[in-house]
Length: 313
Ligand code: GLU
Image (tube, rainbow, N blue to C red; front, side, top):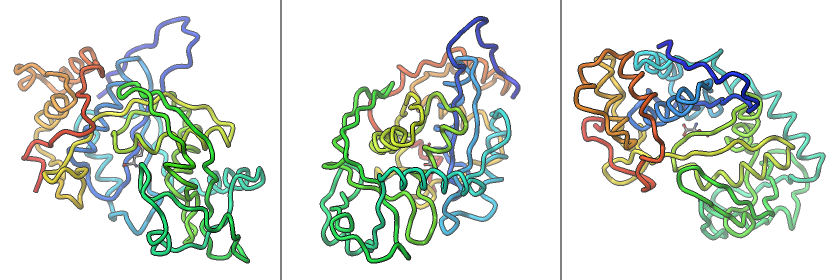
């Protein structure tokens, strides 16, 4: 789209770097478009960079070709990212190094509990089950075929720019979390922290479903000696049954027709109140209006809102 503002001269603040980090489990849909638009507008309205990171960490969950389809769909909607796309599938050495550092510093332990064992004994927390620390109390004889968990023994407060302060006692409400799965795949929590730092991200803009995971990511930043970005979560596009809109809950892939109605619906969803005459504007002018008008304070305070029906199957 070629729309970017020049940062102010002589600013000694680190320049803004935001990102959009889709998982290539399917094509771009309305929910992921909202995340792309919010993160792009937050970056461009401050003259900052907007990067794209493909979170292709979990091959069994990915759809062949989805990464390319997502990128083509971003371009089709007038979103041009800065620099090369970072593919997490190329980043195993960085994740391994971070895990070694955490292990050497004594923050991790191997865990051989299966999902079903954990489901039997664990109690619910704020984001899934709270692992009861079985393998910390009774370490497995060998590390073979074990997951690696981080000891989450801290109270962490995060100030979200939209939803306010969130303080979580991780030991009580979150539990020791997996950094590397028993099948050898690195977990999202480790990868997102390593890569936000590697890409120099100054602010993370993403859906409110990830708000409760943020304190654990901040703990990991502290344990690794990495900077903590600021956070801005936006309301999530919900499917008809209230679940997060996704391929599984019946999200329709965005088409390759006129991209403007999709963008206008995303702007309206984000509370930006696009005027009726924007429908006839050129794509470039629509983006210029959106960058100029962008005010995240106008986003709804609810954690999720319903998706316009035409984006569902
Ligand atoms: N890959 C995640 C998703 O598609 C987003 C992760 C993030 O923004 O931190 O839901």
